[in-house]
Amino acid sequence: MNLSKKEYEHFFLLMWALQYFVNCKLKIHPTIQNLRDYTNSDIEKKANVREALYENIEIIDSFIKENPENLSKADLLIVSSWRKYVEGQFYIERFLKKHTVFIQDEKVYGVLGLQQPLNDLVHQSNLPLYVHTVLLPFEGKIIYDGLLGHHNISFGGGVKRELKETYMRAKQNNRIIDCLEMSCNNSSAQSQPKHLKNWKPEIDQLAIKSKKLRGSVEQPTIYSPAFSLVKASVGFAQLAVSNETDPETLQKALDKVRRAFNKSQTVLNREENY
Image (cartoon, rainbow, N blue to C red; front, top):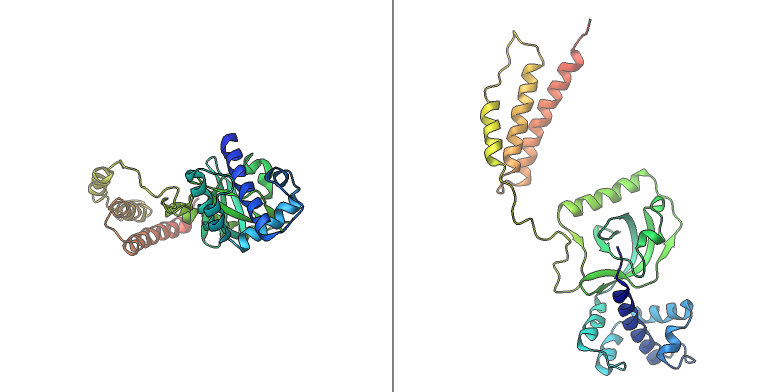
């Protein structure tokens, strides 16, 4: 997913205004005399100014105070939010319909493309891709600032599995960051669904029925461990749908399921077919 044309043009209108201000204040490219010339300047010159901006991020305060382009209060708030930028190396781990997944250490970000979706710039087969960029807040979203440097590094299965696990863990625990502004919850799934189906009555009925399961010497050997597996699984499900259960208790219940499974597996392995 990417910004709309209106959002994209709005972003660069503000960014070029800020960078031109930086260029003037720090006298990086003195030959550039106006904002139009800066907007039309080549990428190398803009890259120099961009670097100076992040090295002197406090210059945003001067820009807001002087407001040389007579920006609205709302636009100045957007520029002010860029002091919360996140710079560094990231792994692009996957493309989703809503955003692209960027991973830095244990933090997982949902990032939007600018003029076009990031999966138009990076082919799926090249993932994970190790990149250097700057993430910025923009109207309740996270974008990159227009420059995306990448490293030609191939990753083995171990790194891919580790990155996938980092993403899955963040997703499961509602830690995917898709907003950097102070007013945001900083999670794409921060709020839980308002109406969850109550499975407890059905699970409790299964528990009552499963208690009637009994193995005996007259029955096939597999019955007893299979019935134990059913009971352990239902017990685990009862705890899972309880909002008051801690992870340690769930883990103990899951260990019981595992033991029942292993016992069933042992019986099957001993089975002789004639």
